[in-house]
Length: 343
Picture 1 (cartoon, rainbow, N blue to C red):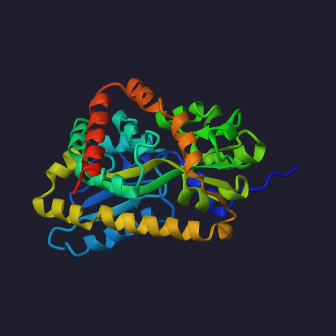
Picture 2: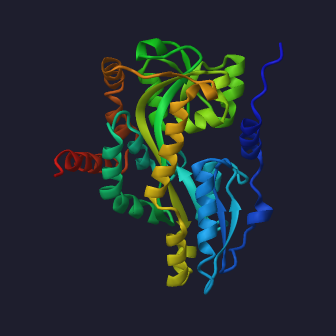
Picture 3: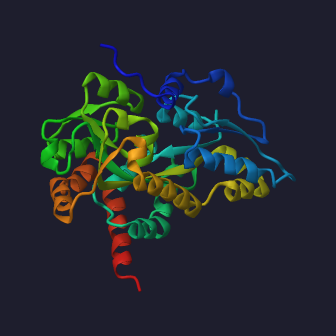
């Protein structure tokens, strides 16, 4: 029996991620003073791809000391871990990364994906805007990187072949996890069988029965064609995923103040990305059938079951990450407390 082939968009993602890093493009040399090689893994038609196009247009207004962007934003340089290595070595100068990818060099980022750390978008926005940037800026600086800003990704949910409404429904189901500790701990906590897989392997693994589902942001889930094999999406909203814009510190520090301002001012603001991502997700959730999605909204009681099943994962994350994990976790709790007591 011939399995259904992934849709063209998914094949595009897979093919890009399988390409060997373009060493000839990046080379061993530093970029010219006015050139910035930019790396990311995005897909045309998404808010994240569009954010780089916005930057491209805005940079043109800074003609006095121009910076020429050269984009490798569709995964041409391989995995996020590979791209981060290139960025730290100065072979590329700027990039956009997910929490999962960036946590390979700053493990404490994984605490932001602790299950049910946040309850509402308002709480997420408050903590992100007021609490965490200084601490993580220092951590990135110690790795030779500059944190230029944060990028919205959105709530993480559970998708599956058959409905998984409560953790009990996941018992002994084969669920895909990413390499992030938070993802693996979640799958284990709900009694499922963990199958760590890179994103490009999701569709083939669903087709062959290697996995029964997994966790993902709604937009990536829909655009990758996953609903064709796993049509059930349960809005667990168990973690809020974000990303960040990073620059090579040595390269950035060598720029003139004018050029540094040009870069900072040309990147979309977090508020702009929030609006774009949330509008895209709202459109998807308003008409899930158009994407072949069967949507499930847990009741308050069902949501509580998810919280109870994953309650110990916060401490497990702290213990597993080590380093400054306890300090960052307390910082997050302080931010949450300030949110709850704000005027």
